[in-house]
Amino acid sequence: MKRLLFVLPILLCAPLAPAEEPATKPATQPTTMPAHVSDASYGIGFNIGKQMSGMPVKLDSERLMQGLRDSLDGKKPEVNEEAFKAAMMKLQQEAMAAQMNVDKEQGEKNGAAGDAFRAENAKKPGVTTTASGLQITTVKEGTGESPKASDKVRVHYTGTLVDGTKFDSSVDRGKPAEFEVGGVIKGWTEALQLMKTGGKAHLVIPPAIGYGPEGNGPIPPNATLIFDVELIEIVK
Image (cartoon, rainbow, N blue to C red):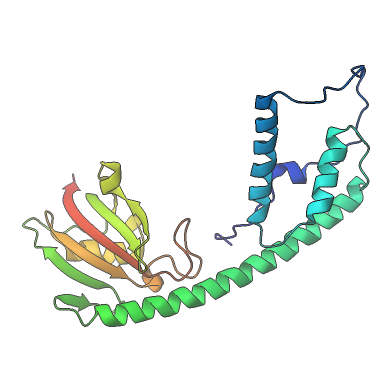
């Protein structure tokens, strides 16, 4: 599942090894830590907690802290390796099931929002809706030739979701993108062949010819995609 967000940190997946007593112990423990040690310690703990809070299943925070303290204090683990592996396997299964439910719910919401957006967009002047559901509006008519699926093109683009969230932009990076017309999502492949070099277009791409129910990276499941595209040239 490409959009499985849950990945247990490697520190939790490491085998439990019996703690070893330090060869020597300081005669006295400092009552206070230097400020930088205190701040670094807090930051490490906070980052671990932040990583854990993004999991689709919740951990026992008290037991988590106990395990951390026991490890730092050099104590032997209360849970043996066999029990730890069994618990981790069950937790992974529960997390995957929980994430699948989250993705399903989010996909249903995104699908409904996208359907409503495209229905309204189709009513706007200049919008052409193709058989695939692609909606394309010519912003500037190009004067050159149209690329074929086998061609490589150079383009500038900005991509957003229906709520206005920007997920990618070659314009912001200040460098045009180059790729084969047939090597991208179906909505792009179709749209580019309808454009002429030097032209600009506004695209609204339904999930069926976008990234579908799985999504991709910052693009959520069943997302309708909006692109402003400039076809700069066909790369010969």
